[in-house]
Image (cartoon, rainbow, N blue to C red):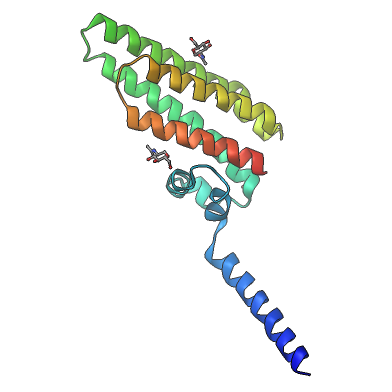
Length: 168
Ligand SMILES: *[C@@H]1O[C@H](CO)[C@@H](O)[C@H](O)[C@H]1NC(C)=O
Ligand SMILES: *[C@@H]1O[C@H](CO)[C@@H](O)[C@H](O)[C@H]1NC(C)=O
Ligand SMILES: *[C@@H]1O[C@H](CO)[C@@H](O)[C@H](O)[C@H]1NC(C)=O
């Protein structure tokens, strides 16, 4: 008898906890927990209106690819604006290099990465994100010392997009 009561208590408690957890940990936090940069993942996705209403991990992954694309466009335009204020020819050349890297990255995301994730080809989409990570570290290595924080966020979030794709 005692056993049954204890058993019932245990089961009820587990059920109650599962419900509380589902309530308290929405999709973004649950999905971000498996990524390598959970803090970047949560802050970027919680700042995005589409991901706040994403119904499932598939949609969240698709949205994370959109964000990688948009961040690459944003970085490209930051370098284009900085270029207008630069006279040093070496710095100008290195900025041009970064503009080309983020241009290539955004072009590939739009042309291949996003369509692939839409078709469920996560492996193919991941390759395009890896390519973008290459572009961003090539830009950093070019030594402009510009927008390092933004590039780091881009790197962190691209890694997040890969990890989300792997978890679908
Ligand atoms: C998933 O996200 C995209 C934005 O990338 C949106 O257009 C689409 O409607 C969403 N799908 C669902 C099923 O909510
Ligand atoms: C990055 O630089 C390496 C070394 O120069 C080069 O082989 C590679 O193609 C570059 N990657 C991209 C994406 O531009
Ligand atoms: C990228 O992630 C690392 C490790 O979590 C963190 O220390 C760093 O601040 C992040 N960078 C940015 C710009 O968010």
